[in-house]
Amino acid sequence: MGYIFAIKVAVLIFPILAFIFTLPYILTQYHKYGSVSLYRSVIIFSFIFYMICIYFLVILPLPDVADVGTQRFINLRPFNFVKDFMKESVLDVGDFSTYLPAMKQPCFYVVLFNVFMMVPFGIYLRYYFQCGFKKTVILSLLLSIFFEFTQYTGIYFMYPGSYRLCDVDDLIQNTAGGMLGYAVAGLAMKLLPSRDRIDRRAYDRGERVSGFRRFLMFMIDMLLLLINTTIIFAYSGFQYAYPVTFFVLYILIPLVTHGRTIGSWIVNMKMDCPNKWGVRIVIRNIIIAVYYNIMPYAFLKLLGYTSHKNDVGLNLSGLAVILFGLVLFASYMVQPIIVWISGRAYYDKMMKVSFVSTVKRKNTIRSSMEAEASMITDQNDGALSDDEFP
Image: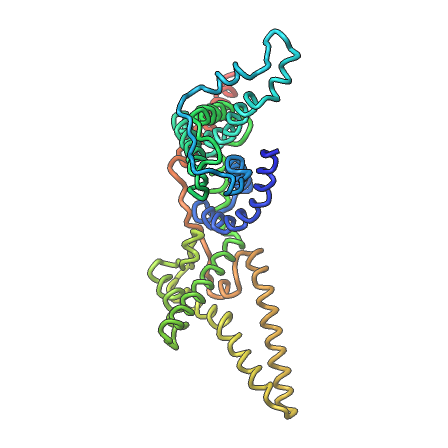
């Protein structure tokens, strides 16, 4: 029942951690590959869920502090679990009727659980993280040591003593599970796409700048603009905090970096245009300032001015101001859709500015692609020679 309870807690906690982790994960993927692979995402998030599960399996259920003494328990004698099994188990190798009862005994299923708990860890390490056997063994041992340290210290001294035994046998069993997972991963690697193949697909997709990638860049730059302006104004009272911050983020940095804002650097792309790129980029970013900042500010000012007047002429002006605000708001709603579909905003088209990916493939991926291309060429050459010389 303790195992089921721990998994239920992991299921409840996982969505919260996944929500916190998602945005950094997306930004990291765009920065590294220029795209987000659904297959990779399933692997990464399933790995996070698995790690949450085994951590809670180690620490749960938590006892009351009053029930825990001040002693710390540790067993440094290896292979005690073998002696315990031989002493406590009802197993009789010659009697098949004892097999099932023996499996239900703690001396058997606890050991089996400690081994199989780490099997997925070994699979992940070899299949996705591309760890060799030696590294898998070391990382499995280190993870097990972390778990035993957690138990020995009473969850990092939150409890006055150990509420579970820190056992060297657990290190042996957990490490054996990681080694078994490494062996099982050999079969998984034959059935599932390789890590290099996943990376190649991500790089291929990353060569095209998607609308969502543009949207992320826009939101990052705008957020940085608002945060920096607020901080500068709050601490210094500098009334020109906004235009100075905008100039640095949208004009100075792109000119120095040849078309990159901080947001575009994070998602690994840059602005490009056929000629006079500096002038075009400056004008483009000024249009952004007018469209997203000055026009809303002007609308609010006009709305406040007309709301204090009662004559008919100004009422008509007020209606015109409201209509202007509605059109502006509608354009803000439509613009992300246009960017999402076409990858370019209207001010990009006006200034003939486009965005290009700056992601660079790793040498290992490039070498792998070249090797595959060489193999295909060799096969084609062989096919041609067979046709020419039957």
